[in-house]
Image 1 (cartoon, one colour):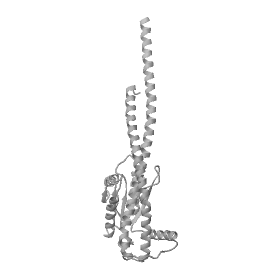
Image 2 (cartoon, one colour):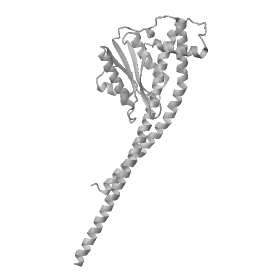
Image 3 (cartoon, one colour):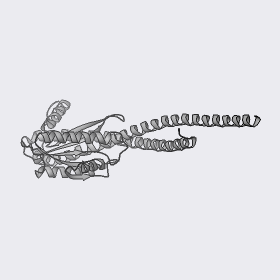
Image 4 (spheres, helix red, strand yellow):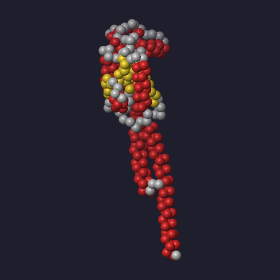
Length: 297
């Protein structure tokens, strides 16, 4: 049985740990609110971008642009797992990496090759540990991504797709539902899905009551060629923001659970410490009584 001093040291250590987890919970909570505000500000822009692209695509008609080109013989697939730079966030990083590895196996079973373009230190370290092929890796901005970070990733992916280095690009990230729920999402980014434009076009017609007649300057084909890379950047930026909010929500929940577990452990150790102290006092009383009996005898 542990001594009273050992139990006291353990209680002090766990109390200090609980102070740390509570502080991390508060920090994550504050960052989560900011991340939610950024997502809410971003979503209307992304929706309008899709509607605009759908309208221009309809006006342009059948056009052949590199980012819209669907290749029948897909030989090489780029998978982009979006994780955090740090841990202590429950299953946030692990579930994205598990889904990415499962997707890799599905692609390989179809006879296609896989190359990873990772975002976040956790993804890069895991992929390197597994000795998987990494085309490029970006780190250092998972907590607060900027649009320039999404541009860098989107440019590299679009260049790889346009040059024929990859025939399909898929991103895997945690979509933010709530502080308690983060949903792993798999999204095809390139080639840009044609049905996505059609759905956006139908939604716009429902709102406007028909297809408005615009005069485009410059030509719709040129406008669409400029909009497509911006759309890819927007999708990447949206995924980065969703992932950042999900990370803070997961970390806040994990730290709250850790604080609760630490409190329960402190209660158990305190009870054990009190019992040990009572046992020591009882032993001392017995020794005093035994000594008194010996002297009187």
